[in-house]
Amino acid sequence: MRILITNDDGIHAPGLKSLEKIARDISDDVWVVAPEFDQSGVSHSLSLNDPMRLREIGPRHFAVKGTPTDCVIMGVRHILDAKPDMVLSGVNRGQNLAEDVKYSGTIAGAFEGAILGVPAMALSQAYGFGGGRGVDYACAEAHGARVVRTCLDAGLPLDCVVNINFPDRAPDDVAGLQVVRQGRRDQNLLRIDARHDGRGNPYYWLAFERKRSTPAPQTDLHAIYNGYISVTPLKLDMTDEALLGSLAEKF
Image (cartoon, rainbow, N blue to C red):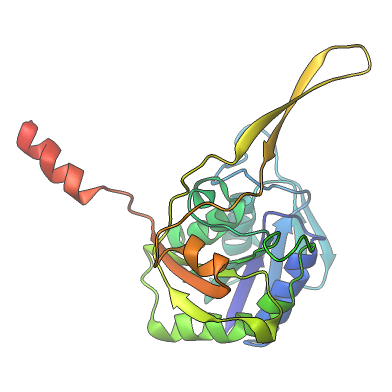
């Protein structure tokens, strides 16, 4: 099995090394194509106005000056001599839950694999919910290969990806695994951090607050908050079937 892996945290990110370990538990034919620099939050963007630079940094390891989407396209359409059997994206530094999936370059890398006709999954390691510890990829490394194999054995339709999140717990303390739907936060974690430079001119950072929401059961948020691995299938087709019918009746 040939596996193409990517991420949005960049070619030197610790989570990418963890994903390579996971992939090598499944196959010895692993190719790494990841962004030269951190591309967190770029969603499914393409580099249309700037050239993509490709740099081979080691055997089957390539850095692309571009987005995660660019990386998957370069891997499938240019670097590999045959289509991979699976695309894995991650392991992201931080959870990709609820509305996160709309912003996430990690999720987008997996979706691009699906668009190109390759079964794809996104993996993320939650942190910040376990007493202020920094991110620790041990949970993802311990459970990742088993979860990926099980999802692959289930048969993945090519119009969806599987979003896998690992809780902020030691591997042996994981409560279990739940297959759940995408949640919705009851608060907005994005805020504007206003500052001034050395000359007194204002500038701004987008910042995130790490607050727990109060999620509904059987959602990705609820699963991660309670120490479970969350597995959520996401579809490329974002059509709202109920509203489709209502609009059709009105028009």
